[in-house]
Length: 89
Image (cartoon, rainbow, N blue to C red; front, side):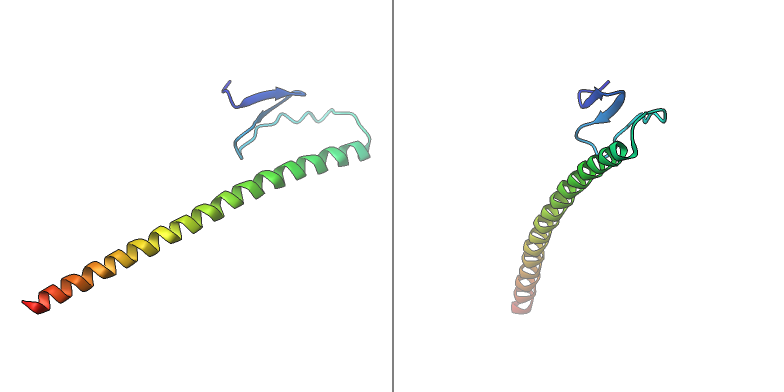
């Protein structure tokens, strides 16, 4: 097993990955209310994980946009300088 995997209540789950393995036992006994609470808690955890991942992707996208703007500006400045030097010949 990897360091990121933990074993809890008969389920194998990866803590830091969006790919989680779970061994859902269909013979679980419980009232429908208990299952609803478990489902709601599970969905809440998944939404939190997805929200974190989305925030990270949005931050990466903003950083990439800044880098692209800088690179485009440098490229345009380079071509303008080259054009000016070429016309001065």
